[in-house]
Length: 125
Image (tube, rainbow, N blue to C red; front, side, top):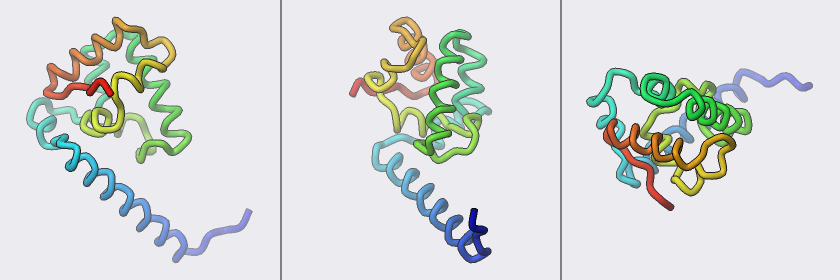
């Protein structure tokens, strides 16, 4: 394996920063307010909200799904604890979440209710 140079490392960090800015811009264009959630609760991440309000089955299904998304670099977070509600709602729809293993109709309804109570809601498509 070839070692990367410090300059290559800095270039990679800059690309990651550009990606994060693009994601934030897309969320803003989609009308998702990041500050809105910060005003509603002290915890800004999805997992802590689901631990407090969700069922264990739903929490396990969502964490497994987000871990696989993180492993395959489909989300810009190294840890699933960093995933914010604003990002989750902006990236996924109810139709996309239907395919998650162990996340049935009642769990999807509960997830959407929890997000609605927090000031967000998943779109259908």
